[in-house]
Image (cartoon, rainbow, N blue to C red; front, side):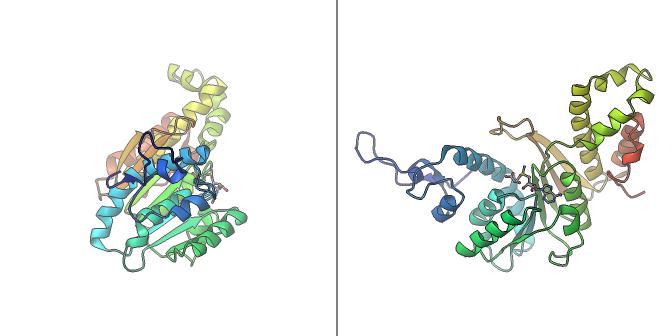
Length: 295
Ligand SMILES: C[S@@+](CC[C@H](N)C(=O)[O-])C[C@H]1O[C@@H](n2cnc3c(N)ncnc32)[C@H](O)[C@@H]1O
């Protein structure tokens, strides 16, 4: 992250105790109040180590999202971002604090979350911090696609560890809302593995490659890998340029794959064909609707 500084560090050898804020890298204008509210700093200004790890992870993700936002704001400052499976909305609040709050116009972040208590807490926090460009909606990702509370098009869609098929619903949302950038850190997805498992009897022995998912543990891991491959092909088949990388700093989690898609109106035919071939080769034809690509 550029432009960051450690605030008010004490000099070596002096006796003044360090506060939590001293040890955090803060950007100019960043809200210490927000960090306290997110329990990254305790009320008496000390660092909460667990939450600090979470903050570092979100900062790390921010490094990937900020350049996308910078590029998009050149065409218009009224950026809209929808964060699916928002949870406590760490990501949304940090994005707002570091980027959105200084934008002019009607830039807005929407958090979508099925847990009503979390939605309510986030809404109260945004009010307390006077972050008017944040809204939290108690909807499932799938419901949000047709919700009148959201605009017909959005600039950026994020989904950070949105459970199971919520990531796929977020992709569907992003495609329907013509998102210019999509940032996904998928969680476990059991749907592909369950179809592989159900069809094992039919497919085992067909080719030696079916060994890739014969053992139950391999079925789960291979299913997860295939899911993300199909997601990438689906995005490419809608004209997006896709990059896949590892979200370092996420060592505690097995689910650290970061998929970033940017709309470039790229040729769609080959990824669409490849997607169909993968579905057919693995006996996953019934998932064509899930990984929908227009003919
Ligand atoms: C593992 S948490 C991640 C929270 C947050 N994105 C983060 O990384 O800190 C997943 C969140 O997604 C929510 N969720 C799960 N399925 C959902 C769905 N279909 N629609 C909206 N939210 C969902 C859960 O309630 C939970 O708060």
